[in-house]
Length: 343
Image (cartoon, rainbow, N blue to C red; front, top):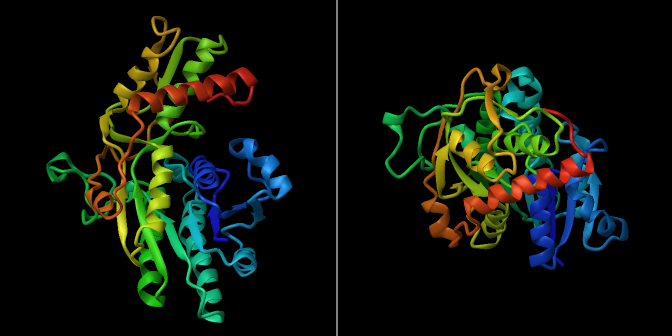
């Protein structure tokens, strides 16, 4: 029986990846989470965890090297999906040291734990996915954007401490592949969203506010930041299918790939799409909130994903409209249950 380890299993992507692997493989799934990790995104899986039905939670922390070593030693996973991170760009401006420590040094600690186990057992050779981010490309001027979109060889120009941390994450993955003959691949996933998306991200906070307006909990005003930023959207469920294909279709050590959707628009258009789906669409006003603006923004995120598509045959299949509808319905359900905080 193959074993997969997912760091950050309680996050949006980690929980959807777990769903996908349980449904589409016969692997045992081990999820790394901290003792204080919220379990909202995996609540539907807890019965399987409690009964040991192919899903197991392991308590560890990227900032605790010993805990990572113990997890790798005890499980020896065949596949490692490293998704855990301080993943909020806006938060990174107020917590840069924590962001850099968790994302860069945390990734190093995990890869070191795997390297040590490989050193102790030469037959151990897992396939490792290190999740970087499209944010590594940062603020690309329109006149320097390639006609086909941002490709893998575009230069890095990170525009936040989070983005800087993901540059380090990206380079660490390639370093361990080259220096220690480890099968590590890195991905730069562009904007991906859907159910369980954190409300610190623009499209999710829009959907959440709209759901709260519909429920009569807040005035009919959606607070926004920069609406001019250009984004290409993918559905999180397409994203996790891509991650599965990454590690199972001819994995090439040291490779790095852009992955993203095909629908591109300004953030303002995303907001208008969500408002158009609302039962209160004729009442909602848009209000700029300065606290939602970043000091500097990666405002041109349009990917060229041909390298990954040609290697794996992957392509997104869930429409932008479906993604946004599912996101809004997710927040409607959360608001109905009273399971939310105002933002």
